[in-house]
Length: 113
Length: 251
Image (cartoon, rainbow over all chains, first blue to last red; front, side, top):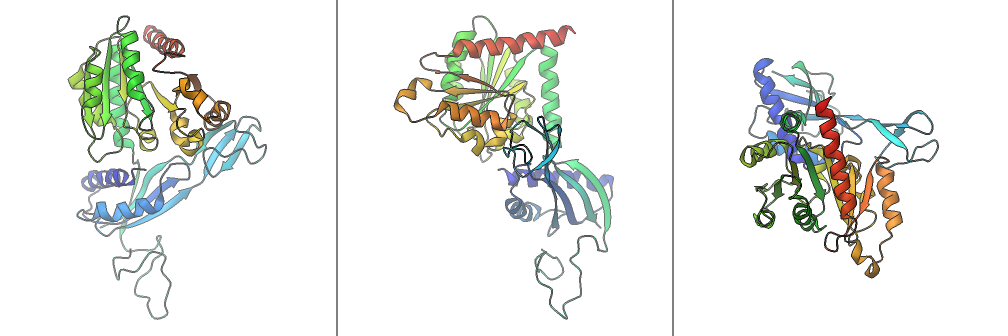
């Protein structure tokens, strides 16, 4: 999807935080990306380098923390692991699942100077 | 990429080349915790729009689909049929041209066109500005026709009460599982162009099954925007949501 605009969102957050947390250069960005967030990590990396080029995060490293997909199965009445949104429940094969984790896309931490 | 020597993050380690460390948890720089959702900025604007709608009793619906599903035809028909009983306004999103807004204005209701240029979706900030120009009336119905795209608009909350996904039977019946995020995010799916079913090899039951698989709560209304099939059900759905708004307002 729109990985480029997501990278612009990342840069906006980094620049906004720069003053509050008093840093002038970002060396590493730790980003949590859920398996169900709809983010193509390779496209994100590509966009990241391009968007950060003329910013305080120029040349920064993007470290991705993958968060597995999780859902509540209404038939089994418990939490199960899923790889994709439309996957069946690995235990009962049903599709009565409510996603409970793995949709996040958040900046966790920065390494700064 | 490593900024010391330019080698990749998961590059091989070569003996004698140890002047820096690639482990993300070992470095000299200071660390700051951020914990910010990347879509947070959009969500802030969306919350603002949602407040605007709630304060004025406006039902805002975000119409999403592939290009060519018949969104604008459905919209002009819906506006024509409903405008005598409720005040209607429209925000049109397209990459280029004001053609769609002109089609809507021809029905006599106010419409604002947003051209996203290179962008593949509307965001809440753009919609906020469109609302300033459109100034929709109290207790009105607002349709936001998103850019024809089944991927990106799923991720961007505009502050709407519900997303309405439109799928036409001239597309593949497996679209709900090919683009699960969108059908997961929608409250209702309108299966359009059913007047063409006799000429097509489209398995309706299969399609409905796929939609329910990605979203067990989705409501499905088969319609034909040109012939009029199912439109009463669609209007009943809208009326139900408007009645729901009123109830929340009174409570």
